[in-house]
Length: 438
Image 1 (cartoon, rainbow, N blue to C red):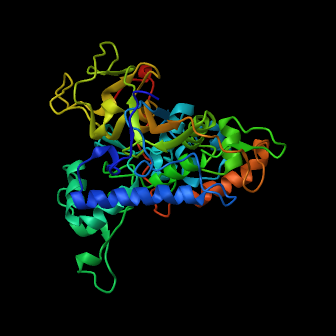
Image 2 (image 1 turned 135 degrees about the horizontal axis):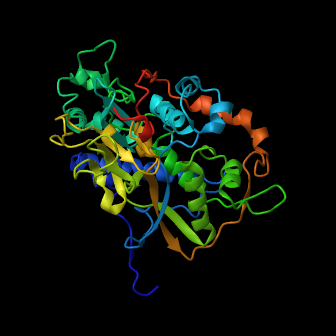
Image 3 (image 1 turned 90 degrees about the vertical axis):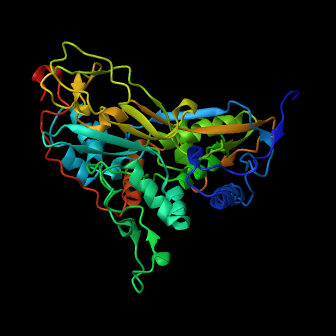
């Protein structure tokens, strides 16, 4: 088409265009990304043919100035809801939801462990002695980047981890972030980064670096996007067209998350319209939006004189939210913002006019965070023939029939790290305004 200039990417950028890596290691990261994408293309349709509607932008020229397509979902975990409170056998969730109404129970469940935060968004918070939230930090950064960073630039990675979590990790020794070599523990060159280290595995420490939930990986994003370019049909030959049918038929991702069905459906729609598809550079999962429209500061504690949230309360520490490419969000009332009695205000002094509750859980903010991926296309390509479902046709299977399989999948994806946290928090937090405010 006239006026459109297509070219290949010189290299894949670091997620969010962060500048952590040396030039040499940025090239290494690009090569790693390119290899993953090529692997998905060659893995193909399952019938022996490579994918024809998924491309590697460093190999295939495309219009890099296009707006592209953004696919988003809510950051709060879809599985943590009343239906799954009754249906799924997840011990920590059952403990966490023992008390409270539906909202409080789901918020408490989502805050209980990183293992249930499976929408490519995880968070950790820290409370004061009164049980009020001082800080909550959200991240959507995949573990692969940090594994690479720590392997290539050990000191730089540790310095970055500490700076992001200041001042909580200032005095932590470097060895705390790594697995030592058992036969030569003092040799740093043999240390291996531990993504689930004690400072990145809890919801209650206030420290967090990247995603650790077993399903929250960049490789998973790439795999879903690639496999979703395969158009499907049922055993009777009918097109598989809606998101629930597609993910169950194709077998990519988890059908009961917010994220995976949306990614798959969005990419599949682009492919069905005659496009070759790829993930936009820099490839990553992103925080695309934070809606604070219903959040107000309750400086006086009685909700009668609500104020705008102070500037600096919501800080994107990594990525660029103006491009819908946020990677890390810190929520903390700036120092010096005081209540009339001189008390430093906290996140728990934020009042949500929609739910009529003060913020007592990080999960309340996750309700207002949109997470997403960005896609790019090459238009006018030949649409590949539709393929049958890989092993069996679940497109028309009832949910009841699928429950045993889904339970098994959930159990399999659970992280090996123990991230159960102390749930004995004050009952006043996250309460309705008319019950008073601590």
